[in-house]
Structures are given as structure tokens and as C-alpha cells.
Length: 221
Length: 221
Image 1 (tube, helix red, strand yellow):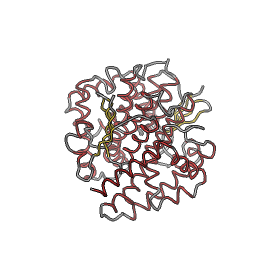
Image 2 (cartoon, one colour):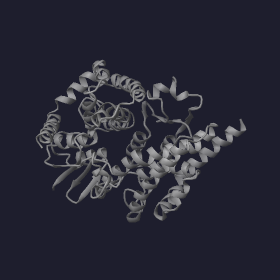
Image 3 (cartoon, helix red, strand yellow):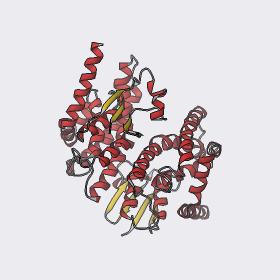
Image 4 (cartoon, helix red, strand yellow):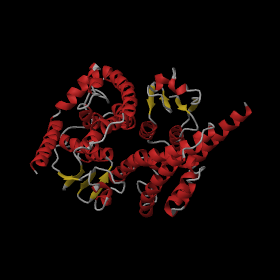
């Protein structure tokens, strides 16, 4: 089966899917969607995702979108390949489901807005909205306090093993570590140790290689 | 095991959990959290959910929050009770995962804002923000167009059977059917037929009975 990821390397959601494919040791083709040119809002991309958002994913005849639906598909379909990302016991599974919702509804909700203000807007020559940044930073502090408590009693979010929910966090944390909110992660010892670990995953290092390769190609062109 | 739902009947997320318990034919205690008095932002509620949002759920010693993590827990833990809410085949399961993300990231995202503007704000003596309503309505139109296409080829969102993802939609649709955006659902024949069906589920009728009972109690007090 030919696996394809359509997306942008500046998109945390795209990197979430690529990170998952790397954890599974699967071969895939990365198809760049130019977000600044609005390619995600036009055909032929809209045939892959009618909501016009990256990433979209193809596995042979199957088309999927929504990064977390794609990672769950990969983790289940290729359960016997590479890293085991789904817990085998029900209790850890329930805890993983809870933290998946926390990631999507709290961490990503606030973190994505900070990434947009602090990285994407300046990259496009726009100015960050200081009041919005202050408000989101305050929200992130409260969220990271909850993570710190969790990671005090458990090495990873779902339990004592790395699972899909930890992976779901890596790309956005990576993006935020290049902004001033980095200090909020570093100030919490359990969060900091968890983040350090996330970045040492061999699969994540492969994602970084892909980013560097494409950046070099962009500079060369 | 004693099951408890802490929440508000004005909250779609709370009704999502209650709807799931009713589908499973499980007995539970409903513990009202007074949102207007801010009980969800104070102890003892924060011990149940440090993010200060309803609902929270207890099953004996286990505490959970995030409505969709709770419904998944109930659907898996009580798989052999009441309605079967989880598909048995992988393909339908993958489709259900996708539509769960669409519900959370598109439908609920926009629909909740409309419910807030058109119902919650007027109920609290505030005025709806007309520009925001127009913007969210436009977004809802696009979202419902995607649902209409999906429901043209499949009776329910995941496939030909009612599953957890259909249930996840019911409470917010119910709330929106009491607002002017009702016409957007009615104008799309497949969406309209699906909504009609959702409201005839015996479990949903039990949720309505609970709402009526509590409303009567509120008027009597």
C-alpha cells in the first residue's frame, strides 16, 4: 500500500501524523501543500478534505483527514509494526483517552494560538497581539500545572510507557520551545523531563531530519 | 458500582454523558453543578476536574472528565449492556474515529458558539453578538453541507448503524433546534432525517424526561 501525507511541515497536525508513521517505521510519501498560497482551500486538496485543513492521508484507496483520526488509524492498522502506541490494558487505555481529550481541548487549543501569535504571524510579517498572548500564556500556565501534577505520579501521560497521547503533544511542544513560552515548560521539572524525553525519540529525530531536508531545499531553490 | 454524573442540564457535554448512560440502560445519580454560581471553578468540583469544566464522572473509585473520554469509557466498560455503540469492524471504527474528530473540531466548535450566543447569553440577560452569529452561521452552513454529503451515502455517520459518534451530536443539535439555525438542519433532507431519528431514540427521550423533571423542580422551588 502506498502511504501519502499531504500537509505542511509548519503544521503541528501534519507533524503529528509524520511522527506516528516514523514510530511505526512505515515508508510514506510527503506531499507538500502550500498553505500561504491557499492550496488547502482549493481543489484538488478539497477532494481529500472538504474542510480544507492539513493534513490529509492516503493509504491505498483509503483517504482520511483530522490528524488524531489518522494517528489512531495508523496505530491500530499497523499495530504489529514499530513502536507499540496503544496500551494493552483497559485502565491505561481509559487514561490515554482522557489525556487525548485534554491534549485536543486544552493544550492544543491554547498552544496553537500561542504558536500562531509568536511564530506564524511574525514569519508572515505580522505583529503578535500582545493582549492575546498574555491571555493564552496565563491559560497555558494553568494547563501545565495540571500536567506537572500528572507527570509527578506517572512517567508518561497514560501510564509508565510512551503512547499515542505523548506523541500527539510533541510537534506543538517543539514549535513552542522556539518561543518565549519555553520557560513555562522548563520551570516545571516533571514536564521538563517529559519534554526532554519526547525529543530523544528516534522517530522524532527522523521528523526533524525531514524538516531540515525541506528547509535546505527551500533555501537552495 | 455507583455511577455519578456531576454537571448541568444546560451543558451539551453533560447531556452527552447522560445520553450514553441511558443508551446503556445504566443507573446513575445526577449531581447538579450550579454554573451560574461558578461551582465548577471552585472546590470541591476542582478535585473532580482540575480544568473546572462540566461534566465530571465517577464510577466507584474512578474519576473521569472530558465528556468524550467518559462516553468512550462507558461504551467500552459496559460493552455488553444496552445499545452497542462501538462498531465491531475496523473499517467502520476508523470512520467513526474520523467523524468523532469532525464533531469535536468542527461541529461542536461552531455549534457551541451559536448556542452560547443564541441561548445562553439571552437567558442571562445579555445580547447576542450579531456579527459573531453571522460568522458562525456561515461556518455551520459549510459544515452541514459536508454532513449532507456523508448522510446521502450512509444512514449514520460511521456507517449503517447508530454509534457513539451520532450520540455525541444529539445534545447540541437539540439545543440548536430551539434557535433560528434550526432551518439550516431542516433545509438538508439527509441531515433532517438523521436529526429526526436521533430524537426518537428511547434513551434520548429519557434524557428529555430528566430535563423536564429538573425544570419542573426549578419552577416549584
